[in-house]
Length: 230
Image 1 (cartoon, rainbow, N blue to C red):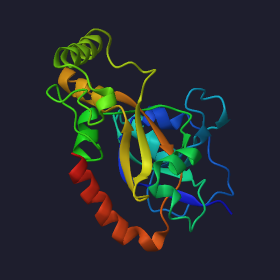
Image 2 (cartoon, helix red, strand yellow; image 1 turned 60 degrees about the vertical axis):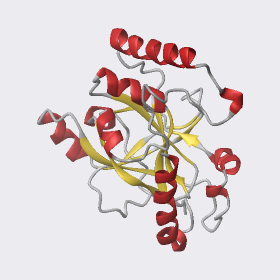
Image 3 (tube, rainbow, N blue to C red; image 1 turned 180 degrees about the vertical axis):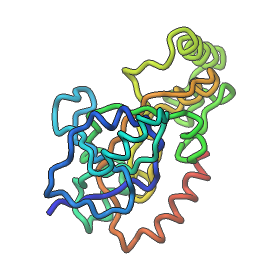
Image 4 (tube, one colour; image 1 turned 45 degrees about the vertical axis):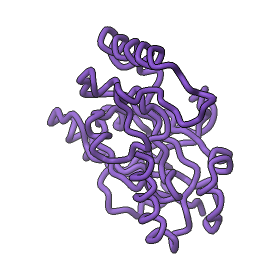
């Protein structure tokens, strides 16, 4: 039996992105109280045609109703099949092991960037003032280069909108194996907010989660970790 895990957060997504998904296989558990659930597949970072596709685990009727009512967003839980063994509490905590098992959703979805900011899942809050400031000396940039790089990103979004080819990357259960966090795209988030965009593309990825008996402790540590990172 497959080990189905669920996102720690609810995501307000455009219902039109989810309603096009095929239904998940009938033998996959639907034991969740959430009304709408997307089961992400396991695709390659650079080629979405490699691997398994996203499916709709629950909520087709709710999605169709939301579209009929012309709703921009609906609350969605994201599910994934763990590629890490249930009682492996090491791999979810170590980046190199976590990335070894990581797979991506086949589809891109759309959210309001202000919603992402309010969810407090960013590991680093990027702004014009701290853009491209990295603690690692290897990636150090001069202030004028930093400023010009961020300004170019903002100008591009103002003129062309958010580039759908490069979605924000959200990793499910990334932080201590219990907490979803934004994985890649912090600067694009900052630029989207500065430009006042109301919709950007996101992509979900996942590997596994910490064993459930560790969740209460790890949730506390995960929240502290996010506070420290900011």
